[in-house]
Image (cartoon, rainbow, N blue to C red):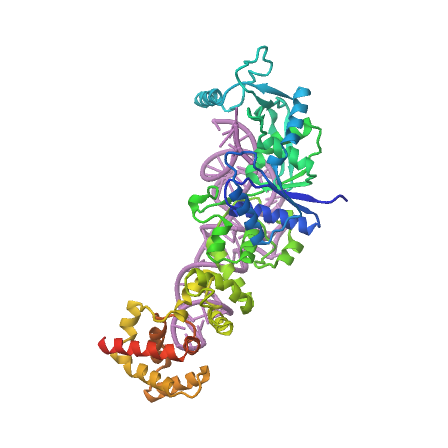
Length: 472
RNA sequence: GGUCCCAUCGUCUAGUGGCCCAGGACACCGGCCUCUCACGUCGGAAACACGGGUUCGAGUCCCGUUGGGACCGCCA
């Protein structure tokens, strides 16, 4: 049994997007599952649109997701001689030819064909047997497609798909500037790199018969193909920027967890019975191309959010603290110079572990733990910082002032005493205090919050709230 | 316009002829828990696109219709 070799081949014309990430993930899982090799190849033959920045961004995104590769990153721009050699071979064997038509001429003819309602928009081969090539033009090289018969793709996901060869265009394999084009390099590279399984988006399905013809012309062995369904936006068209955040780094910056992203992505088009949550090890064990669906999937950020919250709850708090710190810095709540004690930070993070759905949410909802004062939510202060609750606020304040220790237990006892004395409910005491300390009506348990905020700050905030209540 | 792919709750999906008057998950709604929020838990509403076949029996097989998508570039 020969080794399995797969690749992820993004073009660096943008950040690593959701769709690309899932393609990478499926390839990676397939390689890991079969103890094969996962190759990263940068498809940068389009020099005008490829940038170093995007190459970095893609690599960065892969690393963040934990998709490590075994070979590469290869870059097609480093391999130009190889492609040129194969183009020459096709030329020598009469399987390709020079074409002198300009892009403008071709465009015009395409428009014309479209207008006449001709279904087939393909090159008319007028340069195929040119007697006198124009000397003032640099030609492209076209691949000569067979014009009869059918090409059949044996796809691991779609099954057998056949195309009439008369539909296949004589595609350009080398531009007039001497650089090769995608459909050609992809074949050469996949063969040169010993790729056994081509796993890619099904937007490539229609390119595959053309590529198969190139494999045949070059006498190459054809790999196995697996075309995975697209990821769509809510309007069911191909997912793109206009659908909002679509790059993996955008989600990283919003405080999503990579494990959640991987889990979400894998379930988009793949399933294993009713199971929703998978560890990476489990995925490697259970992943298979047979489990991949044929239908396109709509990207649903809400489920990704839920998964992130699930992973947050599963993450050990100590680790969570490390993850939250950069977001606290970004919110301007801490800095290297102003770094709170680790133990305190741990308690603070712990208090939001069941509540924050993203790392960013941690930082934002924990704001009042760090600031000197709080900003009151108007509705909340109007309702709870009033004369009615004034006695409770005062008694809690006094109680804390006279308190021996400063533990959750002691605080709970204090509140109970106030409740009993006034024959009221705990919530009538807890809510005004909550508003006083956090500015709003929603927070972790009040005793926990008081302990985290600390005695001094708590007293100051209560005092301030009492003043407001007196005037309300 | 041509070629190709696809079709189960709003969304992701289970389902490979009888176990399905269709199961799970997110979101939504309601109960419980409760100092608020969240978590958790219990319950609810919610789908086999349509029409023909095949079969004792079809979400599952076949054909058609409709709908959606992709590709048709000197982009990848």
